Amino acid sequence: MKEFFPMSSKYEKYQEVYKTEFDTLKKSQKFIKDKDNLSNEELLKEYKLLSEKYDLLLNDTVKMTKIGDSFQQKLLKANDTIQEQFQKVQKLNKAQEEILGIVAHDLRNPITAISWTCELIEDDFEEEMGEEGKEYVQMIQGSCDSMNFLINDLLEVAKLESDDYALEVQPENICVLIREAIERLAEKFDDKSIHLSLELGEEEIIVMAHRERIWQLVSNLITNAVKFTENGGTIIVSTELKDDKVLIKFSDNGIGIPPEKIPILFDKFTKASRKGTKGESSTGLGMSITKRLVELHFGKIWVESEVGKGTDFFVEFPLKK
Image (cartoon, rainbow, N blue to C red; front, side, top):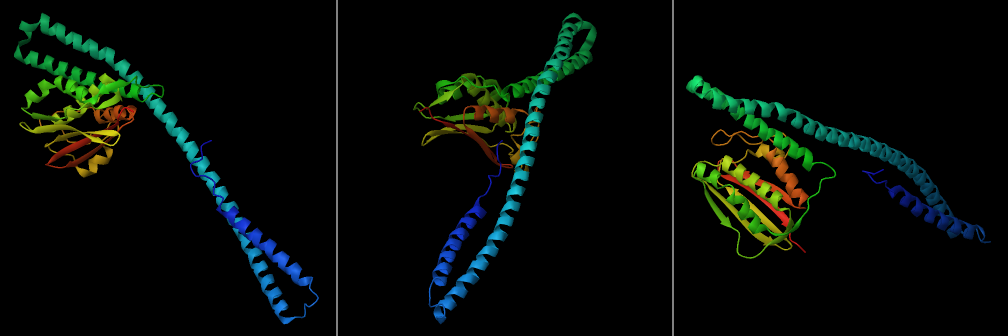
């Protein structure tokens, strides 16, 4: 069993010290008693002093032993309690992952049926519906699309947090992967006339990575930046080498994140920011997925932000050795 509080042996060390003192005192007492000149005033004085020290040490040892026993019992009890709670949390997390997967799969079938029905109505009853009918069908289709996004995120969370999930990585130039991911997002920048600046340098920066997963986490961070940046804003992506690591920075001059929301930004089902600048919504899972993807690459992610001035996301990966 894992011990969250290792058993302290401090009181045992005290006992060893006292035992050494006892041995010394006993030898001294025996030496004095064996002398024929016990009547000597100096020897009697030394004998009394040693006897007093012996009694004090004996008393302290008894107290220390009791304290040590009590302390050890409390630590054992605390370890048992924490271990029990830890196991409960693990079971709850596993149950949550299973539920997420089941719910997501069960939701997908009816959503697909509704979406398919909307397409049939649009194709077969276009003239009969009129403009108002078309708007209703489009609203339903939009809701289906939103539900599909949520279902996909739920399935993604369940997969990434599975104990047996691992990435198959290979040497990749991180700058190339960033550019490839951003090329896929060109339409998002055009929609809000956002200026994107890449400051990636010319050198090769090789990391052990899963190409599609890097695309995914870059896409998540860029999409998030676009969502919370006003029309005509700026997003900057840069890289910096630091010893045996590469630091990737995603900066925007958007609306920022309130300071009280930053600590929970990467938690599941948490919408730590306000709605996007055009009212865009989110599932509350994007940043949690991004953090998990970074961790699967043995990296770190953190954020700095100021309301009204923008946000900086930092991602750090180890370089290939």
